[in-house]
Image 1 (spheres, rainbow, N blue to C red):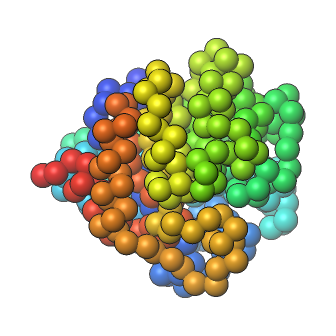
Image 2 (image 1 turned 180 degrees about the horizontal axis):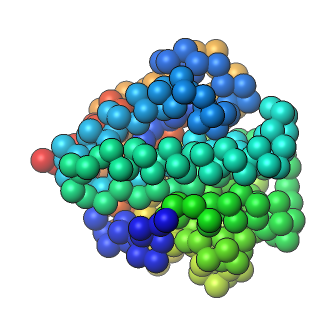
Length: 314
């Protein structure tokens, strides 16, 4: 079962790495077909698990070499009822693959016997609708009910924490926070933003974080920003308010393109790893609690290595 559920080591200000853009790497570098951008079916296949192991290994090697912690996010971003149904997965199938995904992460952690820093298993989950557009908006109560099944499944596994990523409107984030609280699972809430630094709904990042905290009694362990380039949101971090202390993680896109441009793109934009790393280094001066760094769409182990070297020079 969970090692760190009641004592998340990344809350102690130590540096933790995550992986990069799992789906974009598997599609563009590995040549895998991931219908609907869903990676969770891979955990049911021997070849799929082998591909996931090849994907995670360079990140684990980097974390071990640098002596820093690592967070293994399960490949379950799309493993919720609506997306799964479109792929032919019913409720029982969905529970099975979420459990298999955590078991796979457990195996990766067990194999890293020479890794001295903590390895945390995160049950990853995504929005009910499109990650870039708030096209399927729910009330807080609806969102809590909708996401409860996946959260309750993770609560019965070795997952240490839940990471809800690429959220684009606040009611869904509140519902997830409340469902996690009901299940006794720590939760990380990660919003995505547009090029103006606001959520796709137009709400400011500060207002969104404040609203979730007020509605949930401050339940999220911390907040992250993902699936946007630092140049899209760095300016909103200039405000020296206490709300910035709640942001502990960044998983940025490699590309400076907008969400609309990325949706229309036919080729992967992997950006400039060195430039992205310097953007992270600059953000660490603005975010006093930043301790979790990784990547999102278009990033791979090259980007994470550069980021690690920039924020924590050897």
